[in-house]
Image 1 (cartoon, rainbow, N blue to C red):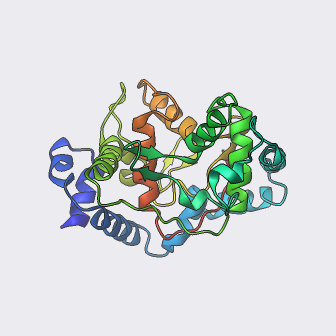
Image 2 (tube, rainbow, N blue to C red):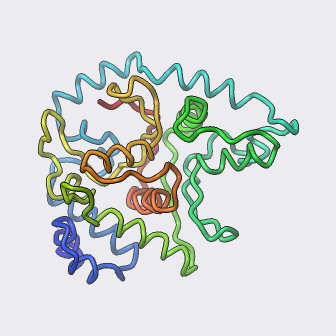
Length: 278
């Protein structure tokens, strides 16, 4: 039942979305994995953390060669320096993010019961800064990219473990992210699911379309197109623009809910960021 529901959702039908909206998150997760197991029976689910490179052997070989001297290394080094800098009140990021910092990326995003909203790592970092008397960083700026790249690198091989607490607000945030993923938008009338479910594995121009599974494990990313390391929400904005829609602001409620939904779908997979993508 749920597998067929996901297939219908991948086609972007509004009626199907309405019928599926009340499925429990764990049923969504099981259905999504079943979908990709049947679509790509020879590819292990955990391989999807490598995105399109799990689906294209030729491009994977080129990518692995690039990983010998990855272009995101500069961001990691800069992030390590930023992590060691004291905040304005003399505290550190470890004081704010927890004793396990910088190995904390696996803890994000999570539903913050105090604010009633999804907390992402980027938002948490700026909250730390503001609470200590520092200015918030630009979410698309080099400092945020560097610090999150360092934290992602230190958190490699940790398992994604996103929870949906027993709180109707948390489930509402998850469902909002899910609805965003399957809603058509822009002049091209495309949903996220069109590329990453309906047409997954096919080529769009010269690029192979990746699976939904593993979408959040490898961020931030150095994109050759950007010529710099950037965050997941920048990619959300770019995708919205590419379908000729109106992108939202980075760390907007809708984008954080989308990240929450996508991260939950990757539960149990390991983190492997930062990464390089075209």
